[in-house]
Length: 73
Image 1: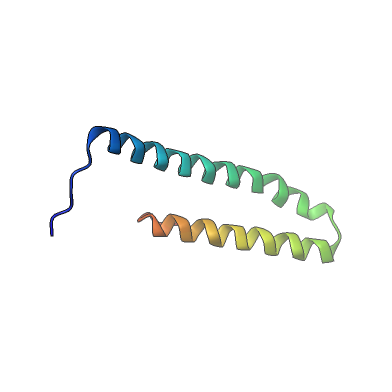
Image 2: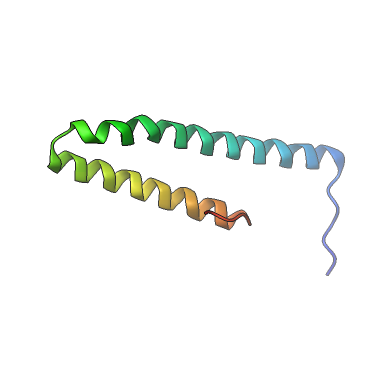
């Protein structure tokens, strides 16, 4: 079955949605930078929790990127 071509308005909506997803991804990654930089100054027990949260966040972001047909490197 042939896939239906999007109408101009539908294509615009799709492009906007993809742009927002990309912007949110970048925003999340930028938010992780200060967290990762501050991890050296916190106690070991808290550091492990923070690094676990960062790793899980990166795993979710990676999964979302790959589900969108892109490659996480």
